[in-house]
Every structure is written in structure tokens, then in C-alpha cells.
Image (tube, one colour):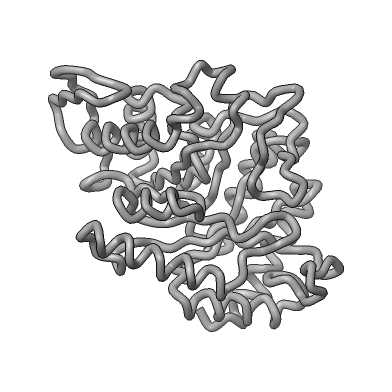
Length: 314
């Protein structure tokens, strides 16, 4: 089992000092990867439903540092951490520019980029960015992935798609990682699973919504579906990386049925949850240790590394 952690992107902890303190401590403590979320603008009022909280509301007040900017700063301050977008909303950015930015980051970080990708959920953000139509975001995401893979592995290149086209261009330097930086597909809808099966090097679901974590038995069902879809695409399911975001929940807030929520409680209980998810095929566990201050975030990260991981046996 590998372990990753989230870096702050908004709020009072999303400062240069805060981000670098947490990134360096995570690397020192032996974590494999750091995750950076992606938002560019927020509407003052929104009718879009956020899929990862019970009330459907996104918890941001409107601020968010830009993803590639954070990645560049962290890349220069660390040596071993993998740098993971979790997840980059692909339709927000020009695909050729995204290919260039990602390849440049891979080169400058020494080959440490993993591109987690998603189709997005915030319609008003699509509109503000004048991105391709929100209703076509799934098809756009698939096409952008194809463009990234081509421009990361071939030069010169031409492309004639439904949403984008170019002819005889060079987009170099190519990434250090071959054939390209890993692409992890986020989400656990049927469409996301199909995208992971067809295009992904890994699957990167959020481990649950704010009050209802995705339990191991439900995760197993999704993995069975992903395996079937991957095999139907003629691809090797065992080659996919399976990463799972697990917020460290407040032990005082039970699941709706009154039971203990996974990844809450004593170190021994959380270690048992890790073993359960490892047994069904999770390769990397992403813990969300972000607190109200960087000090609190660092303390939670240190506690997990020192008290939980040794008990997990993984």
C-alpha cells in the first residue's frame, strides 16, 4: 500500500508557507504522493449539485489557487513526492496548452507527474471559462485525453476530432515518463468507470461524501464493474492503479445508521479499514488530513504516519 495526502488549495492554510510546510513534512514522513484539487472560479450563486457532500453544496467561499501553479512550487521544493492533480477538470483548459504545461512539469520535476482527470460538475464555472458545452463534457474529456496522449508521445502530430483539430505541430519537449505521465480517472459513475477502463492508467474515486463514506463492499462492486469494462476494452485490469481518497473523519459523527464511519476512531480501527480496502485491491490510500491550520494539518499527518500506518501491515 502506498499513501498520499492532500495539499490545501483554498482558505487560510493555502499560502506558500502552508503548502510547502505540509508538502515537505509529507515527503519526510514517507508519503508517496501529494494531491492538488482544481477550481478556477466560483459563482456567487449556483444551482449545480456538488456530488460529494450531503447537501450538494461545495464548501468553498470562492477562493482557490490554480492547480499547475501549486504543482510547480511543490515540484521545486521536493525531490520524491509524486505530484497528482485530484482531479484536473480537463474541459476547462485548452488541450494543447494543457499538454504543454503537463509535459513541462514532468520534465522539471524529474518525471513525477500523475494527471488525475475528471469531467467536472460546476456548470457555472464552465460558462465563466467559456469551456465547451457542459452537456458535452464527457465526450470532450475523452477527446482531450486522446490529444494529451498523442502530444506526449508523437512529434509532429495532427488531430481531427469532434471538438478540436490541429495539423503538423510539434509540442516538445515530451514528458520524461514513457509512454506518458500516468492518467488517473476520477469519479465512480458508470461513465467515469468506462473512461477509466478505456483511457486510464488508474482509477481515483473519492472515498465518500461528507457524511456517507463509500464502504469497502460498495467499492468492491465498483471494482468488479471496472474489471469487466477494462477486459471488454481488451486491456489488462491488473495494470491499473487503484487509489482511494479517505478523509479522516471525526469519530464523534457516526454514519447515518449509527455505525462507526470508516477511517474514523482509534488508530487500530483505521488500520483495520486500511487492511479491508487493501484486500479488495486498493493500491494507494489518499488521506485528507487538512485542518483549520497548517499546524493541525501537520499533526494529523504525523499521527497517521507514526500511529496508523505501522498497524496496518501494509
